[in-house]
Image (cartoon, rainbow, N blue to C red; front, side, top):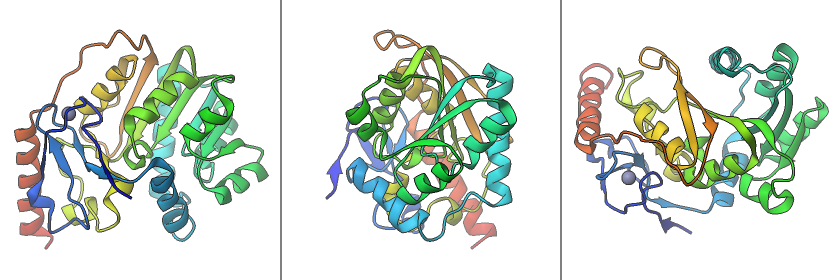
Length: 283
Ligand SMILES: [Zn+2]
C-alpha cells in the first residue's frame, strides 16, 4: 500500500514531477521539491515493505557485492573514513550491511569492531558464519527491540540511504545509535548536479520506484545531515568521482547547522540536459 509523503528534507509537500524522466521510469517518476530541490518519489510503501523488496526481489536473486566495481567503491569509502576520522578500535554499525564484505574489510584491514543491521536473513546468516555480529531487520525494528542500549562510534549507511523508505527516519535512528561525538558516514552513487556519469536509462530504471526513492546532490545530502542533528560535514571530492560520501559528527538535534538548498529549476534543467545528452549519443 502506497502513502504520499512530504519532502524528507524540508517537510513541504510541494513537488513537481521531473517529466523528462517519464520514458526511463517505471510506475512512478521521481519528483523535485520546489522548496529545497530534493529529488524523491512522493508515494512509497512502508519501510518493512521497501526492505522486503530488496531482500526478496533483489538481493536473494541477483545482487552481490562480489564484483570489482562494488569492491572498489567500498575500498574508496573505507579509505576516506580512515583518513578522515580513523577506524582503528572504533565500533562501527553498518546499516544495510549486505553480505558483510564492507565490514569484513573494516575489521580485517582497519581494526574496527563491527556490527550490521540488515533486513535480509540470508545475508545475516552469511555474516554470522564470518563472525560479524548482526541484527536481521530494519533500523526501526532494531531500535524498537533493543533501544539505544548499545551505541557506536560510527554508523555507516553505504549505498542504502537512497533505498530506504525515509531518509529522515534512518538518519534519526542513526543519531540515536551513535555515541556523543560519534560520526555518521553516508555514501551513495546517486549524485546529482555533477557531470553525467552514465546514460539516463542506466540511472533511472523501470524497477519499483520506491525502492530507490531518493537521489542526492552534495547540498541536499548535507541538508539531510544538518536537519537530523549532524554537523561539520566533510564531503569527498565527488565532482569527478562516482561516489558522493559525507562524514558528519553527531551534534545537537535542536541546533541545525546552516545548509544550502538546490534551486529546483536548476535540477529540472540538469535532467533536461542529461536527457538530451542520452538521446543524442546513447539512444
Ligand atoms: Zn523539500
